[in-house]
Image 1: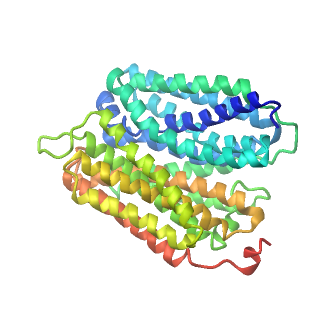
Image 2 (image 1 turned 120 degrees about the vertical axis):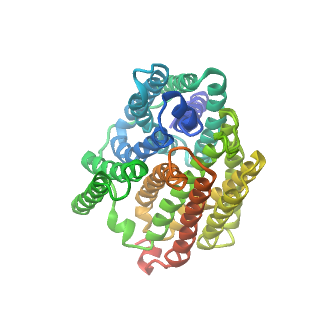
Image 3 (image 1 turned 90 degrees about the vertical axis):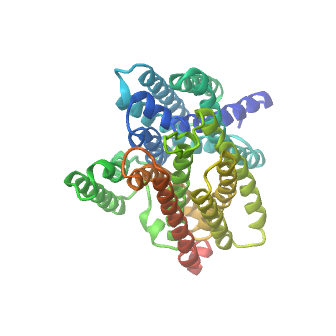
Length: 470
C-alpha cells in the first residue's frame, strides 16, 4: 500500500500518464500515414506498416511482458519498457528527419513503440496490488478510460504538431511525453517484494508474432506481387506453419502463454472470434477514413484536407466510444451481453455503409465516426462481459488477457487489410473512389460476419461446471 495520500496521488498521476501517453504514442502512426508516404516517397501500403507493426508488437508483447513483470520484476519491467519506448520514438523522429535512414528505420522505431501497448495492463496491475480494494475499483476503470482518451487525444495532438512542425516534430513530441512519464514513474512506482515468478516462454511469443507477421506481409504484398505469386504463397505458408508449430508447443507446455484448450474448447470461442473480427473491422475503418480525408486527386475524389483535420476525425469517435461504453454498461444490468453485442456490431456496420455511399463532405465522415464510436463502445465493453460468463472464475484473468491479444491481432490485421483492399479495388497505388467503396463494402462484410458469429456461437451456454466456477 502507498504510505501517504501525497504519494498515492502522485502514483495515480503516474499510472494515468502511463496509460494515456502510451495510447498517444501508439496512435502516432494513423493520421501521419499519408504524410509519411509523401515525405518518404513510398506507397500508402508501405507507409501503413508504421501503424500495423506497432499494433502487432503490442499484441505479441502483452502476454510476454505480463509474465516477465510478475512480483519484484514489475517495477524494472515497466521502467525498462518505457525507456525502450522513448528510444523507439526518438528513432522514428530521426528516421523522418534524416532521408538516409528512411522507412526501415521508421518501422523499427514504431515496432519498438509497440511495447508501450503492453504496459497498460501492467499499470492496472500496480493499481490492483498497491491501493485498497475500494480505491482500486475507482482507479482501474479510470486507467482503462485513460487509454481510450489517450488514443483519441493522440490523433489531434500529433496531427496538430505535424501540421505546423512536420512529421519529425510529431515524433519528438512523443519523445518528450514518454520521457516525462518515465521520470515520474521512476520517482513514484513502488518496489514489490520478492516472490515466485512464472516461467517465461519467449519462443511461443516469437512464433505467434512471426507467423502473424508473415500472413500480414503476404496480404500487404498481394497488391504488387499478386495472390498467386510464389513469394506471396511462401509467406502464407510460412505463417500457417508457424501458427501450427506455436499451437503444438502451446498445447504441450506445462505453463503456456495462452491456454488454447480454455480459449477454444469452451463457449469462449464466440467472444474470441468476435474480438478478432471487430478489431479488424475497426482498424479497416480508421485506415480508410484517414485516406479519404487526406486524399486529393485530379478526378475530384477525396476530401483534400490537411493532416490536422484527419486527426480531428477521431475526436467524435473517442468521445462517443466513451458514451457507448457507459450506455452498454447501464443496459447490461437489464439485457444479457449476448443481445447487446450484436447491437454494437450493427452500429459499426451502419457507419461503414454510410461512409461507403456518402463521403463527399467532411461532416459526413464526422457523423460516421460518431456512430462508429458508439458501436465501438458497445462492442468492446460487451465482449469481456460475455467472456466472463463462459470461463471458470479462476481462469477469467487468463481468458481476458488472451482476448486482449486477439484484439490487437485484429487491429494489426485491419490496419494492413484496409489499405491492401483499397489498392486492389483501385487497380494501383493511387486510391480511387471505386477502390474506397470496395474496401468499405469488404469492411461491412467483416462486421456482418461478426454479427453472425455472436448470434450463432455466442449464444452457446457454458457447461454447468463452468457457470459454477468449477
